[in-house]
Length: 448
Image 1 (tube, rainbow, N blue to C red):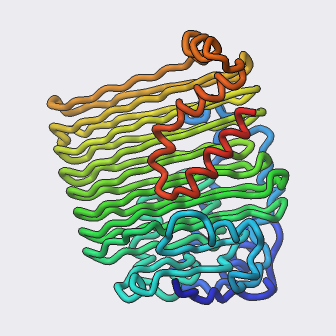
Image 2 (image 1 turned 135 degrees about the vertical axis):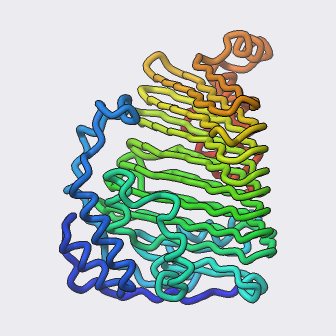
């Protein structure tokens, strides 16, 4: 693969600390934003000041407590790290260059800016794009402007407004009509600066008849307190095939807020995998919109909380057209004093006749002090549909535990085997062998 240079300034002159209108203007000047993007930032900041911080009186936030969050404690940007050659990258990035399983492209972002990117030359010749969003806004302004914040409005809530005002780095993934990207494309966001606010925006555009697999990964140092407000917008146009993996391994001091929204047009197929292993607190919306006849979505989730982690996921399967389908399975394991919240909604519009939707949430509670809340919901306006949902919350099956221990395994080893088996059907869907092994190792550490 050919390395493409990433140009970043060595310093950030004029940067204003803290969250303010002046800081928004300074960031926009630093990035040399086109006029339309600078205006979007100002509109978003006005929305941020206008919108209230969510509280437990809001239905979506009843089970997630933000009283300990102080947004003013975070700096929205830092001086970019210099770009470098592969050999100069930190060790944490080296693993992605050598990880088992071939890739078609790789983009690495450290804190607020990209530091390395590469793309297979044959894909570049076909018009495939994999670049940081700051560069894309200047190099491909029409493409970015047409799609940016078209699925996730910048004023949906206080966190999306803050995100749009201070968005830095991020990624654009674009596949032209009819082009098939056989190997995965991957973007890795690595947060290293304590007290930093990181505002990533991933924009995936798959034109009609195209196909791709895309891995979106987030990680940070374990003890660095930080804030992440991220947005992911995925456009699967007519007949496109998109496989999207969202892997969150933030450190235990990160407040993580995000929205992942997929728009599936006629006869397109989207496979989504959402993995959440890290953060102090996570609140993520995962929305799948079946907008055209024949569109389909498979949504898988894998969550593992320990310590005092709080993982809150809200999913939407929205059927807006006839003959659409969606299939969701979220699995969570919890130990210590960890808590998960799953709130899932299937919404079928009146015109979406012959829609087929399924939703399941399975929770494995490994300690008496862990807790899982599951709230599956249906809103059905059509009269010719197939729609089912279900949820389970419980400890390890004592019969399974007894069987394994009767075969000579210790209780700890038997419990480990059961948890690994619980997650294995989801892990098998991960598209890179090296990534599968990293996830298995992370789960093994959490089991203890």
